[in-house]
Image 1 (spheres, helix red, strand yellow):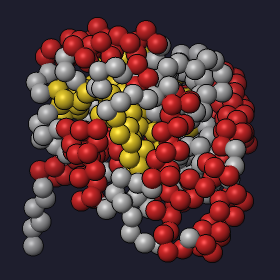
Image 2 (cartoon, rainbow, N blue to C red):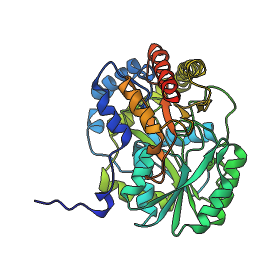
Image 3 (cartoon, rainbow, N blue to C red):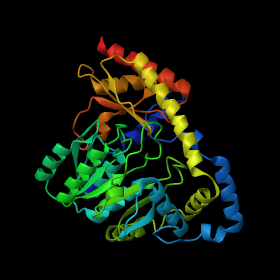
Length: 396
Protein backbone atom coordinates (compact mmCIF):
# COMPACT_ATOMS: atom_id res chain seq x y z
CA UNK A 1 0.00 0.00 0.00
CA UNK A 2 1.21 3.49 -0.82
CA UNK A 3 0.95 5.83 2.15
CA UNK A 4 -0.13 9.43 1.61
CA UNK A 5 0.94 11.89 4.28
CA UNK A 6 -0.51 15.26 5.23
CA UNK A 7 0.85 18.34 3.52
CA UNK A 8 2.05 19.59 6.92
CA UNK A 9 4.43 16.69 7.44
CA UNK A 10 5.09 15.27 3.98
CA UNK A 11 8.24 17.31 3.38
CA UNK A 12 9.46 17.62 6.96
CA UNK A 13 12.79 16.06 7.88
CA UNK A 14 13.80 14.61 11.24
CA UNK A 15 15.71 16.93 13.56
CA UNK A 16 19.36 16.74 12.58
CA UNK A 17 20.30 16.95 16.25
CA UNK A 18 18.14 13.95 17.15
CA UNK A 19 19.59 12.04 14.22
CA UNK A 20 23.11 12.83 15.41
CA UNK A 21 22.17 11.38 18.80
CA UNK A 22 21.65 8.02 17.11
CA UNK A 23 25.31 7.94 16.13
CA UNK A 24 26.42 8.48 19.70
CA UNK A 25 25.81 4.94 20.88
CA UNK A 26 29.55 4.50 20.32
CA UNK A 27 31.03 5.46 23.73
CA UNK A 28 34.26 6.52 22.06
CA UNK A 29 32.53 9.49 20.38
CA UNK A 30 32.86 12.83 22.14
CA UNK A 31 29.60 14.72 21.72
CA UNK A 32 29.46 18.49 21.51
CA UNK A 33 26.14 18.11 19.70
CA UNK A 34 23.70 17.98 22.60
CA UNK A 35 21.62 20.82 24.00
CA UNK A 36 21.24 19.11 27.34
CA UNK A 37 21.92 20.49 30.80
CA UNK A 38 24.72 18.79 32.69
CA UNK A 39 23.63 15.75 34.72
CA UNK A 40 25.62 17.35 37.54
CA UNK A 41 22.96 20.09 37.65
CA UNK A 42 20.11 17.79 38.72
CA UNK A 43 19.16 18.06 42.44
CA UNK A 44 18.50 14.33 42.65
CA UNK A 45 18.57 14.00 46.45
CA UNK A 46 16.05 16.77 47.00
CA UNK A 47 13.76 15.59 44.20
CA UNK A 48 13.80 12.02 45.51
CA UNK A 49 12.74 13.25 48.95
CA UNK A 50 9.91 15.29 47.47
CA UNK A 51 8.74 12.39 45.28
CA UNK A 52 8.64 9.98 48.21
CA UNK A 53 6.58 12.41 50.28
CA UNK A 54 4.13 13.09 47.45
CA UNK A 55 3.52 9.36 46.96
CA UNK A 56 3.10 8.96 50.70
CA UNK A 57 0.74 11.88 51.29
CA UNK A 58 -0.63 13.25 47.99
CA UNK A 59 -0.75 10.23 45.71
CA UNK A 60 -4.40 10.67 44.67
CA UNK A 61 -3.79 14.18 43.33
CA UNK A 62 -0.45 13.25 41.78
CA UNK A 63 -1.82 10.27 39.85
CA UNK A 64 -5.16 11.75 38.77
CA UNK A 65 -6.22 13.89 35.82
CA UNK A 66 -5.74 17.63 36.33
CA UNK A 67 -6.70 20.93 34.69
CA UNK A 68 -5.20 21.92 31.37
CA UNK A 69 -3.95 25.32 32.52
CA UNK A 70 -1.66 23.74 35.09
CA UNK A 71 -1.25 23.17 38.82
CA UNK A 72 -2.46 26.44 40.37
CA UNK A 73 0.15 26.56 43.21
CA UNK A 74 2.91 26.21 40.60
CA UNK A 75 1.36 28.93 38.43
CA UNK A 76 1.42 31.25 41.45
CA UNK A 77 5.09 30.35 42.03
CA UNK A 78 5.94 31.04 38.39
CA UNK A 79 4.12 34.39 38.34
CA UNK A 80 5.91 35.49 41.50
CA UNK A 81 9.29 34.43 40.14
CA UNK A 82 8.73 36.12 36.76
CA UNK A 83 7.88 39.37 38.56
CA UNK A 84 10.80 39.22 41.01
CA UNK A 85 13.49 38.02 38.58
CA UNK A 86 12.41 39.42 35.22
CA UNK A 87 10.03 42.30 35.97
CA UNK A 88 7.18 40.55 34.17
CA UNK A 89 3.75 41.55 35.43
CA UNK A 90 0.90 43.54 33.94
CA UNK A 91 -2.85 43.18 33.67
CA UNK A 92 -4.54 41.23 30.91
CA UNK A 93 -1.95 38.46 30.88
CA UNK A 94 -2.31 34.80 31.81
CA UNK A 95 0.17 32.03 32.63
CA UNK A 96 -0.19 28.34 31.88
CA UNK A 97 2.09 25.36 32.40
CA UNK A 98 3.20 23.48 29.29
CA UNK A 99 5.05 20.27 28.49
CA UNK A 100 8.36 22.05 28.14
CA UNK A 101 9.02 25.26 26.26
CA UNK A 102 8.77 23.31 23.01
CA UNK A 103 5.03 22.79 23.45
CA UNK A 104 4.51 26.48 24.20
CA UNK A 105 6.12 27.41 20.88
CA UNK A 106 3.95 24.94 18.98
CA UNK A 107 0.75 26.03 20.74
CA UNK A 108 1.40 29.70 19.98
CA UNK A 109 1.87 28.94 16.29
CA UNK A 110 -1.25 26.78 16.25
CA UNK A 111 -3.27 29.56 17.89
CA UNK A 112 -2.05 32.41 15.68
CA UNK A 113 -0.98 31.05 12.29
CA UNK A 114 -2.88 29.60 9.38
CA UNK A 115 -1.15 27.43 6.80
CA UNK A 116 0.88 29.70 4.55
CA UNK A 117 1.31 32.45 7.16
CA UNK A 118 4.84 33.53 7.95
CA UNK A 119 6.87 33.41 11.15
CA UNK A 120 9.86 35.76 11.14
CA UNK A 121 12.82 34.66 13.24
CA UNK A 122 16.48 35.24 13.87
CA UNK A 123 18.77 33.45 11.46
CA UNK A 124 20.12 31.09 12.71
CA UNK A 125 17.62 29.98 15.34
CA UNK A 126 16.40 27.05 17.43
CA UNK A 127 15.63 24.00 15.25
CA UNK A 128 12.81 22.88 17.56
CA UNK A 129 10.99 26.16 16.95
CA UNK A 130 11.55 25.99 13.19
CA UNK A 131 10.06 22.50 13.07
CA UNK A 132 7.12 23.55 15.24
CA UNK A 133 6.30 26.34 12.81
CA UNK A 134 6.77 24.15 9.76
CA UNK A 135 4.62 21.35 11.17
CA UNK A 136 1.74 23.83 11.40
CA UNK A 137 2.16 24.87 7.77
CA UNK A 138 3.80 28.22 8.53
CA UNK A 139 6.66 29.62 6.44
CA UNK A 140 9.85 30.46 8.32
CA UNK A 141 11.56 33.67 7.24
CA UNK A 142 15.00 34.45 8.65
CA UNK A 143 16.55 37.80 9.54
CA UNK A 144 20.30 38.06 10.14
CA UNK A 145 21.37 37.71 13.77
CA UNK A 146 24.29 39.99 14.58
CA UNK A 147 26.50 40.39 17.64
CA UNK A 148 23.98 42.73 19.30
CA UNK A 149 20.74 41.05 18.29
CA UNK A 150 18.53 40.73 15.25
CA UNK A 151 19.32 43.17 12.44
CA UNK A 152 16.46 45.64 12.91
CA UNK A 153 16.98 47.38 9.56
CA UNK A 154 16.75 44.04 7.78
CA UNK A 155 13.79 43.13 10.00
CA UNK A 156 11.79 46.14 8.79
CA UNK A 157 12.60 45.37 5.17
CA UNK A 158 11.69 41.70 5.65
CA UNK A 159 8.32 42.56 7.19
CA UNK A 160 7.50 44.85 4.26
CA UNK A 161 8.10 42.14 1.67
CA UNK A 162 6.62 39.21 3.62
CA UNK A 163 2.93 38.45 3.18
CA UNK A 164 0.84 37.35 6.16
CA UNK A 165 3.58 37.69 8.75
CA UNK A 166 1.94 36.83 12.08
CA UNK A 167 4.67 36.08 14.58
CA UNK A 168 8.20 37.26 15.41
CA UNK A 169 10.16 34.54 17.23
CA UNK A 170 13.30 35.60 19.13
CA UNK A 171 15.68 34.21 21.76
CA UNK A 172 17.24 37.45 23.04
CA UNK A 173 19.35 35.99 25.86
CA UNK A 174 22.12 33.41 25.22
CA UNK A 175 20.61 32.57 21.87
CA UNK A 176 20.45 29.01 20.59
CA UNK A 177 22.56 28.26 18.57
CA UNK A 178 24.66 31.44 18.51
CA UNK A 179 25.14 32.00 22.24
CA UNK A 180 24.74 35.76 21.68
CA UNK A 181 22.67 38.22 23.74
CA UNK A 182 20.66 41.14 22.35
CA UNK A 183 21.28 44.60 23.77
CA UNK A 184 18.52 46.55 25.50
CA UNK A 185 18.44 49.06 22.62
CA UNK A 186 18.01 46.20 20.16
CA UNK A 187 15.14 44.75 22.20
CA UNK A 188 13.36 48.10 22.41
CA UNK A 189 13.76 48.76 18.70
CA UNK A 190 12.52 45.25 17.90
CA UNK A 191 9.45 45.91 20.07
CA UNK A 192 8.73 49.20 18.29
CA UNK A 193 8.92 47.53 14.88
CA UNK A 194 6.64 44.67 15.92
CA UNK A 195 4.09 47.08 17.40
CA UNK A 196 4.09 49.26 14.29
CA UNK A 197 3.52 46.22 12.05
CA UNK A 198 0.93 44.37 14.18
CA UNK A 199 3.26 41.45 14.88
CA UNK A 200 3.06 39.29 17.99
CA UNK A 201 6.49 38.68 19.56
CA UNK A 202 7.30 35.26 20.99
CA UNK A 203 10.15 35.80 23.47
CA UNK A 204 11.78 32.46 24.22
CA UNK A 205 13.96 32.59 27.34
CA UNK A 206 15.02 29.07 28.39
CA UNK A 207 18.59 30.12 29.25
CA UNK A 208 17.98 33.47 30.96
CA UNK A 209 18.94 32.28 34.45
CA UNK A 210 22.23 30.78 33.27
CA UNK A 211 24.21 34.04 33.17
CA UNK A 212 27.71 33.54 34.54
CA UNK A 213 29.16 36.97 33.72
CA UNK A 214 27.94 40.45 32.85
CA UNK A 215 24.81 42.35 33.85
CA UNK A 216 21.21 41.24 33.41
CA UNK A 217 19.28 42.82 30.52
CA UNK A 218 15.52 43.41 30.88
CA UNK A 219 13.26 40.99 29.05
CA UNK A 220 11.12 42.30 26.20
CA UNK A 221 8.04 41.21 28.11
CA UNK A 222 9.01 43.46 31.03
CA UNK A 223 8.24 46.57 28.94
CA UNK A 224 5.30 45.11 27.01
CA UNK A 225 2.72 47.80 27.71
CA UNK A 226 0.68 46.96 24.61
CA UNK A 227 0.29 43.19 25.29
CA UNK A 228 2.00 42.00 22.10
CA UNK A 229 4.57 39.69 23.73
CA UNK A 230 4.23 36.00 24.57
CA UNK A 231 6.94 35.08 27.07
CA UNK A 232 8.13 31.49 27.41
CA UNK A 233 10.58 29.73 29.71
CA UNK A 234 10.94 26.44 31.56
CA UNK A 235 12.58 24.57 34.42
CA UNK A 236 14.43 22.31 31.99
CA UNK A 237 17.81 24.04 32.31
CA UNK A 238 17.64 24.85 36.04
CA UNK A 239 15.89 21.82 37.57
CA UNK A 240 15.31 18.90 35.20
CA UNK A 241 14.93 18.64 31.44
CA UNK A 242 13.14 15.30 31.64
CA UNK A 243 10.38 16.63 33.88
CA UNK A 244 9.18 18.70 30.88
CA UNK A 245 7.84 21.62 32.93
CA UNK A 246 7.59 24.79 30.86
CA UNK A 247 5.46 27.88 31.20
CA UNK A 248 4.17 30.63 28.99
CA UNK A 249 2.71 34.04 29.84
CA UNK A 250 0.95 36.28 27.36
CA UNK A 251 -2.22 38.17 26.49
CA UNK A 252 -5.15 36.28 28.02
CA UNK A 253 -7.01 36.06 24.73
CA UNK A 254 -4.08 34.29 23.07
CA UNK A 255 -3.33 32.04 26.03
CA UNK A 256 -6.96 30.89 26.20
CA UNK A 257 -6.74 29.73 22.58
CA UNK A 258 -3.50 27.94 23.41
CA UNK A 259 -5.31 26.17 26.26
CA UNK A 260 -7.89 24.84 23.80
CA UNK A 261 -5.12 23.56 21.54
CA UNK A 262 -3.37 21.97 24.52
CA UNK A 263 -6.54 20.14 25.54
CA UNK A 264 -6.40 18.36 22.19
CA UNK A 265 -2.69 17.58 22.46
CA UNK A 266 -2.10 16.21 25.94
CA UNK A 267 -5.03 17.24 28.22
CA UNK A 268 -2.52 18.56 30.77
CA UNK A 269 1.18 18.56 31.60
CA UNK A 270 2.38 15.79 33.94
CA UNK A 271 0.78 16.74 37.27
CA UNK A 272 3.18 14.71 39.42
CA UNK A 273 6.16 16.64 38.09
CA UNK A 274 4.27 19.93 38.44
CA UNK A 275 3.71 19.13 42.10
CA UNK A 276 7.39 18.22 42.51
CA UNK A 277 8.45 21.49 40.95
CA UNK A 278 6.14 23.47 43.25
CA UNK A 279 7.44 21.68 46.32
CA UNK A 280 11.08 22.28 45.31
CA UNK A 281 10.43 25.99 44.81
CA UNK A 282 8.91 26.29 48.27
CA UNK A 283 11.06 23.90 50.30
CA UNK A 284 14.54 24.42 48.84
CA UNK A 285 16.64 27.34 47.64
CA UNK A 286 16.38 27.38 43.85
CA UNK A 287 18.51 30.51 43.54
CA UNK A 288 21.38 28.86 45.44
CA UNK A 289 21.02 25.82 43.18
CA UNK A 290 21.16 28.07 40.09
CA UNK A 291 24.34 29.71 41.38
CA UNK A 292 25.95 26.26 41.49
CA UNK A 293 24.89 25.63 37.88
CA UNK A 294 26.28 29.01 36.82
CA UNK A 295 29.61 28.22 38.44
CA UNK A 296 29.70 24.83 36.71
CA UNK A 297 28.96 26.32 33.27
CA UNK A 298 31.35 29.23 33.79
CA UNK A 299 34.12 26.71 34.35
CA UNK A 300 33.15 24.56 31.37
CA UNK A 301 32.67 27.46 28.97
CA UNK A 302 35.99 29.00 30.03
CA UNK A 303 37.75 25.68 29.49
CA UNK A 304 36.25 25.21 26.02
CA UNK A 305 37.17 28.77 24.99
CA UNK A 306 40.72 28.28 26.25
CA UNK A 307 40.99 25.10 24.20
CA UNK A 308 39.56 26.80 21.12
CA UNK A 309 42.10 29.60 21.54
CA UNK A 310 44.89 27.03 21.82
CA UNK A 311 43.98 24.50 19.14
CA UNK A 312 41.81 26.19 16.51
CA UNK A 313 43.29 27.92 13.45
CA UNK A 314 43.00 31.69 13.62
CA UNK A 315 40.79 31.63 10.52
CA UNK A 316 37.97 30.07 12.55
CA UNK A 317 35.82 32.56 14.47
CA UNK A 318 33.70 31.76 17.52
CA UNK A 319 31.43 33.54 19.96
CA UNK A 320 32.31 34.14 23.62
CA UNK A 321 29.02 33.72 25.48
CA UNK A 322 28.33 35.16 28.93
CA UNK A 323 25.80 32.46 29.73
CA UNK A 324 23.70 29.66 28.30
CA UNK A 325 24.98 26.40 26.80
CA UNK A 326 26.46 27.08 23.37
CA UNK A 327 29.41 28.41 21.38
CA UNK A 328 28.91 29.20 17.67
CA UNK A 329 31.89 28.61 15.39
CA UNK A 330 32.28 29.83 11.82
CA UNK A 331 34.68 28.30 9.29
CA UNK A 332 36.46 30.24 6.54
CA UNK A 333 35.05 29.85 3.04
CA UNK A 334 38.03 27.73 2.00
CA UNK A 335 36.80 24.87 4.26
CA UNK A 336 33.80 22.84 3.13
CA UNK A 337 31.57 22.84 6.22
CA UNK A 338 29.91 19.49 5.45
CA UNK A 339 33.30 17.90 4.94
CA UNK A 340 34.47 19.34 8.26
CA UNK A 341 31.45 18.00 10.21
CA UNK A 342 31.70 14.57 8.61
CA UNK A 343 35.46 14.33 9.12
CA UNK A 344 35.08 15.43 12.74
CA UNK A 345 32.54 12.65 13.32
CA UNK A 346 34.89 10.18 11.64
CA UNK A 347 37.52 11.41 14.10
CA UNK A 348 35.05 10.68 16.93
CA UNK A 349 33.75 14.20 17.69
CA UNK A 350 30.14 15.18 16.99
CA UNK A 351 29.07 18.79 16.34
CA UNK A 352 25.86 20.21 14.87
CA UNK A 353 26.14 21.72 11.36
CA UNK A 354 24.97 25.30 11.12
CA UNK A 355 22.58 24.73 8.21
CA UNK A 356 20.35 22.84 10.65
CA UNK A 357 19.42 26.17 12.25
CA UNK A 358 18.62 28.12 9.07
CA UNK A 359 15.12 29.41 8.46
CA UNK A 360 15.67 28.50 4.80
CA UNK A 361 16.37 24.75 4.84
CA UNK A 362 18.20 24.93 1.51
CA UNK A 363 20.60 27.70 2.55
CA UNK A 364 24.24 26.74 3.19
CA UNK A 365 26.14 27.58 6.36
CA UNK A 366 29.81 27.79 7.26
CA UNK A 367 29.07 27.49 10.97
CA UNK A 368 28.62 24.76 13.55
CA UNK A 369 27.40 24.65 17.16
CA UNK A 370 29.31 23.41 20.20
CA UNK A 371 27.78 22.53 23.58
CA UNK A 372 29.93 22.71 26.72
CA UNK A 373 27.41 21.77 29.43
CA UNK A 374 27.25 18.03 28.80
CA UNK A 375 30.80 16.75 28.02
CA UNK A 376 33.33 16.12 30.79
CA UNK A 377 36.29 18.45 31.17
CA UNK A 378 38.61 15.78 29.75
CA UNK A 379 36.35 15.33 26.74
CA UNK A 380 36.26 19.09 26.17
CA UNK A 381 40.06 19.21 26.02
CA UNK A 382 40.43 16.11 23.83
CA UNK A 383 37.47 16.93 21.60
CA UNK A 384 38.44 20.53 20.85
CA UNK A 385 41.99 19.41 20.02
CA UNK A 386 40.56 16.90 17.53
CA UNK A 387 38.40 19.64 15.99
CA UNK A 388 41.47 21.87 15.74
CA UNK A 389 43.49 19.10 14.10
CA UNK A 390 40.60 18.46 11.68
CA UNK A 391 40.42 22.13 10.72
CA UNK A 392 44.19 22.36 10.23
CA UNK A 393 44.06 19.28 8.02
CA UNK A 394 41.36 20.81 5.80
CA UNK A 395 43.16 24.14 5.59
CA UNK A 396 46.33 22.61 4.11
